[in-house]
Image (tube, rainbow, N blue to C red; front, side, top):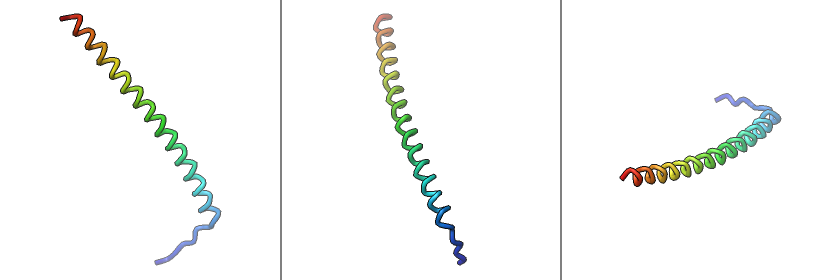
Length: 58
């Protein structure tokens, strides 16, 4: 098999870019987690409101 040497500086540059992308992904993941929590809160509130409405109509 032929081995193609990648210049070290390109390799290091890619490592830096990868680390940067991983940071972005982590940040987006925590933003998603936060949004998910908010969605769950809204669902609970909605369920409570619907329960009130059904109690009133009885």
